[in-house]
Length: 296
Image 1 (tube, rainbow, N blue to C red):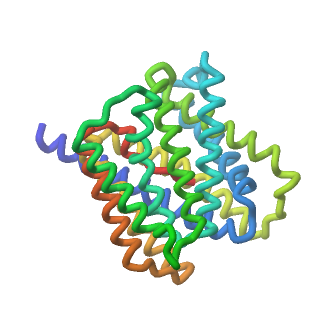
Image 2: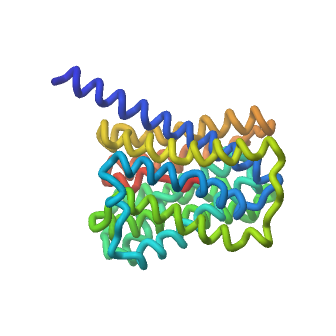
């Protein structure tokens, strides 16, 4: 029994690390594409690639009937909110270094905690509130509003974190009434439709090298979703959740390798405070919905 549990646990950790790597690499590709293409065009191609893959996964995990729903309005709302997440995050990637964008994006669980009070009527106890305040202090350290190094793009990424928190809160509200794959499918379909309507105004013909990059970015997005889902299936959430923060290590490495980005000390200090806050909330609250962050 013990060896089985250990094997399952290592599988969970492995899937989490793989999923996080897919997220980080997908973000790096998105940042590179964003040097030429509008975030809306990137969203269109990524969701265009991801949607059939999600349907295929659903086909072999319960059948296409899992995509049926009686709440199209809920999915429309979630899709529009998630569209805001994707637009802000991809835009932020073009404005800020990769590591700084990733560190700020980790604030999403903090907004989940704060917004769950007025929107879901939940109560936040003292330890959780203290950890949340520590996390917001970390966000202020990273973005340094009013300082000479402040970049308005940081507020765009904060907006992405808020939108993503709202996406998670709606999942908490309606997730037990809808199938997982329906939630994922329609949350991907709506941004595809929204971005498609904007193409006449934002279209930029991709260079030959950009076409495979769009394809790989879409595949990585689905790979990340699959890896994170399997991670929480094989191992306890409180055990695998901390490995989500390895994304910051990948972001630092990829940012340095491709763009010569070297985060300053305050990004590491603020990022450490945000991570410490997220870990404290995760272990105290044990809610898997708090173990996520916004991502392209």
